[in-house]
Amino acid sequence: METSSTNAQSGAIGILDETIVLEIARFHPEKDTEPSYDSFEVPLRSDWMVLDALNYVKDHLDGSLAYRWSCRMGICGSCGMMVNGVPRLTCETLLTSVAPGPVRIGPLDHFTVVKDLVIEMDEFMGKLQKVRPWIVRKDNYQPKREFIQTPAQLEVFKQYSLCINCMLCYAACPVFGLDPSFTGPAALALAERYNLDSRDQGAAERTDILSQHDGIWDCTVIGECSEVCPKHVDPSMAIQQYKIDATKDWFKTWLMPWGNK
Amino acid sequence: MAAHARRSNRPLGWVMFGTGGFLVAFFFPIHILLTGVLQPLGWVPTPDQHHMLTLLENPITRIYLAILLIFAFWHAGYRLRDTICDALGVRALDFPIMLVCFIGAAAGTVATLWMLLTVP
Amino acid sequence: MPQYKVYQPATYRPRMSPYWFFDRWPYLKFMIRETSSVFAAYWAVVMLAQIRSIRHGAWAYARFEHWLSNPLIIILNAVALLFVAFHAVTWFMLVPRVFVRQMTGSGAIPDELAAAPNFGAWIVASIVVGLFLVGAI
Ligand code: SF4
Ligand code: FES
Image 1 (cartoon, rainbow over the protein chains, first blue to last red):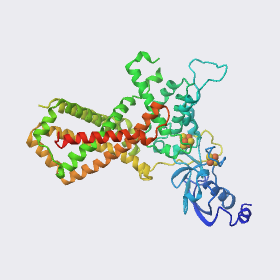
Image 2: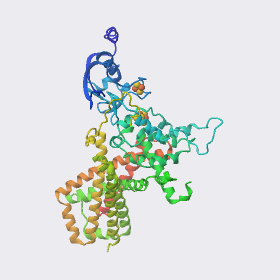
Image 3: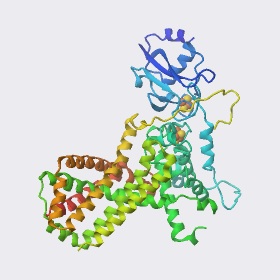
Image 4: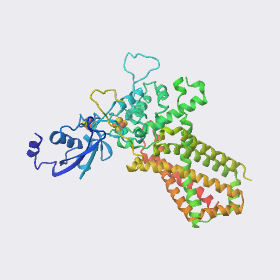
């Protein structure tokens, strides 16, 4: 199917009459104890993303290749992989941008590998839950209509709310690699997103959890999370801001122990 | 309240680290450049001991040096603790590493104060 | 830990290489920045030694200067200078941004603009301290 359409378009825009070699990490849970790399030669097309090349491999060369994807437009966050050692959304990475190859494609760093390029996500989901990513109200207030929020109030946290849970930032974070219990960039940015939300009253509760072990203080500002984030969430900035908030709180508690409760 | 009590005391160290970071960034390069490199090479004039002592006897100089050095020690101690953990991949040993680094910073603080308070 | 295990006979958990910071330039840059703390501590100790020698009279100060003129020490100091200067640049690029964000609630001010006052202050501070150190004041 793919071949005939390729033939039909021969000479059309996108066809480069060249090939590129992909070195793809393979891990078969029933046979292997650790991953190895398989090489595949695929057409190099200027209109292809790395994900298209993977689809070509699966359709034509080896149907047993396992990987995740869905939207092909950088919004579902499921196609994150290591491309030449850097975490990328494969549906947003042009194949020509990594030419001439060979291109190394692996599962996201630091996570548990289930098969080939598929990683275990429960770990990440647990971290998201831990930061209480919902609007917390102290007063058990049951609104009769929406909470009013001005555009200016939205602007304060909007950037931190754009995360698509692609986990690229975790794969870029050596602290998470060294210490898997670290809450990590996306989850901490999400916490700060709710802390800054004018409707939320849960900041103290969250800080109780996140100013402990494995929280904001484990971050040593390597900053790669912000570099690789496809949505420019800037989790590193969120964490540093969170540190300032927690520090203000800490001094308030020590200088005026009576004022805090 | 219990959770509140378990909050990290990092903020104290972090403020020392941050203040020290600024002071080191602003003042250390010029000190190292002149005292450590250019003056020993003889490329810029070096004042004699008498001149330096007059400078040191001025309380403002001593306050400047005390603030600069004490915060520098805590800056370095705080950062070194995390660096050792990251570089060697030994976050599990954070506590003893922290103790060594902070005892070092405390020793630097005591030495600085003693050195500057007892200027003849 | 995976909660779902039915069709997962085995999984693979990668381990970080002990030399992970050599893997990519951004990580190495991070490590260089962090290592500046060693040189900051070293220089703080040198300054203590300097203060001590000044207090102890002309002879002690001469000995301190003699120690500083050792070529190996000069090289060490030059290296320390590079590391600490790198710390300064990274610091001025990052920290003002965080403060601006904290105060304005958005990243409205461009990074370069947020960092600029620090570089200005750095030059002024260096000139003032420098004049004292060469005995011009
Ligand atoms: S913060 Fe960015 S890199 Fe991290 S999961 Fe969200 S979108 Fe992906
Ligand atoms: S396939 Fe959805 S983000 Fe790439």
